[in-house]
Each structure stands twice: as C-alpha cells, then as structure tokens.
Image (cartoon, rainbow, N blue to C red; front, side):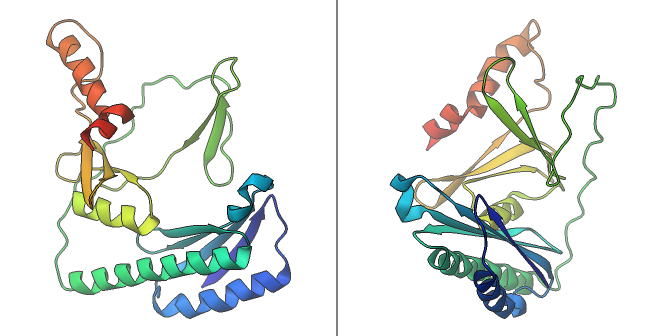
Length: 230
C-alpha cells in the first residue's frame, strides 16, 4: 500500500512523514483492498485560527468506495491522530458491511445514460488540473467557480448513504439505480436523512404545463428548500 504525504502552504518534515507512514501501516489489515492513502497537510496562517491551524486529510483509494477523514488541531500531530481515529472507524464500518453482504448476489443496474454529443463546447475552456478540477471566473467578476467531474455508477439510496458516511460529508450526489434520476442524499437533524431527486422530464421553461411545473421543481432543489425541510 502506497502512502503519499503532501503539504499545502506548508513544508512537511521527514520526521512527520515517518510518523504518518508508521501509523497508517497498521491500518492495512482494515483496508486490504487499499492501493494508496493520500495524506494532505494544510497550514492556516491566520493567527485567529490558531486552535485549528493544522488540518490533516486522509483519503483511502483502492477497489471500492473512497474513504476519507479529516481533522484540525493546533498542531499537525494532534490533527493527524484525530483524523486517523475517524478513518479507522470508517474502515471498520466498510469491512463489516463487506462481511454482511458476502454471499449475496448484487442487483444488476443499467449502464449510465450516454453523454449528450450535440452540445457545442464552450470556447477557450480551461484545462483541468491533475486532480480533474477546473476553476473559472464568473464573467468579469472576481467570483471563482470550482468544478470537478466524477464518474458516476448507478447505486441504491442505501449505498449512497453508506458512501456519504465513509467520506464524512453532509451530502452525496449520485444516480439512483432504480429510476436513473440524478439525486442528492443529505443529512438532516436527529439522525435522519433526506433525498432530493431531479425529474429529467422538466428541462426547460416552455409554455403550458411544463412552465408551471418548472418553478416548483426548482424550488425543491434549492439549498433553501432543502434547509426548510429540516
């Protein structure tokens, strides 16, 4: 298993790299299918953020879903210890789920819809970075839009919630295996979850019934609408 340590806005001394490598090597038994663990260390120079000046993010890449954990502290060793505890718990959860699903025949899902080929590409499209991220500005304004495209495999809502917990996010974008609808699972208060789906039939503001239905669908999909349901 390869361990890659990188610093963002900071240098990573060899002593810390060795500390990280030694402790992550112990997790190999929890992640036998892991091919690589990426470790990103970020330093926040703002003195007002001294209590959380060091951030450590751990990402396990291999066969199966990506598993991620991150934590902040006033020093990088403390942040790393917090992050590795979270990562170990998520790896155990993934291992237990594999055991409980062993022997079951997976439900076949249809292939994702092919991309639309007849759309004209935008002129002077920026080249993506090494991790597939594209950053553009909104017109002449200083607003920067960060865009990243992920390969989506259709999955059930149960699988989407499971992968959302593995990466520690409050929402998860996926394609529903049963309906082929683009969907977002999100965390609600009180240990409950919500799912918002897009109806592909409502794609334009035309006349008649489509025009009347479009504002309602758009209202449900807005962040404010999602927050209101909480």
